[in-house]
Length: 235
Length: 89
Image (cartoon, rainbow over all chains, first blue to last red; front, top):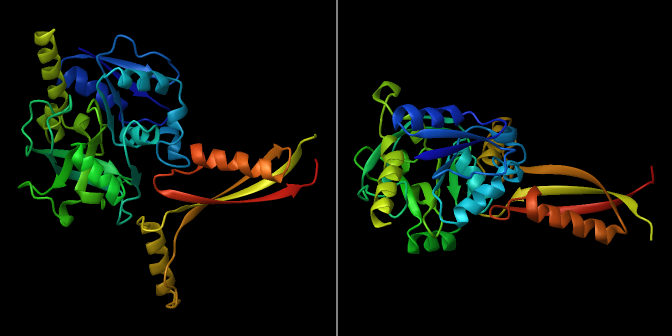
């Protein structure tokens, strides 16, 4: 499987993602510079974390004008699996591939620690095969990760099963004290209506080996591999 | 018709109801200084643009389009624009 990782000026999670694909999952990783215009040949795309363009104006706001983003949008429109991690999630909301926006953390602190998230749906390529209710332990590192939608938009997300991950405690209970940034409805990750584009604030690519403190991130990339096998069987 | 130069001032601010932890922290700071009468603080962004346009209305319309497309995020923010004519350079 070939997985493309889009690199912007200011990305800092790009090499984490490349290593996770190669060392963690044993798959082929393809770095894609933001000035490239093609993502041809990739089976999935990762928009990694960092501070693209210095987070100028708003986190992710300027990255959306990078030439590669048109190819990312086309890939997503064809149903290709795209995942945005942290700053990548912010970018995908700014390009309107994902709903909502990410605000400054409620308590203003840069939240850098391990959290638990609960898988809410298995209908995305990044959660396929994972039982809803599965608890994953993943690291976070962000200052602007407070997910925001209006109550009406939240009802829509619920109705269309677009909430993919929620912050919970280790036992899987969504509680205010397990929500690291004040996200609406404890939301840690969402998907588009179709389900092929996913964004989340936690960093699965920084948790692919016990040596890194945890390996639960493998479930998310591993889900992608399962999907491919399923597609191959049905083809 | 010749174009003139206009200075446009744009203030971008969070919509009512959107949590503003930065404003809350500033308010707490003011309270610590003894300004206990401060009831709310909302933090925003100030941008100053110099644009060429046929007239002030055209300048405003163009800056409003920029706000909708980039300068603000319509999901969470509103904006206010003031336009002033600038002396030709």
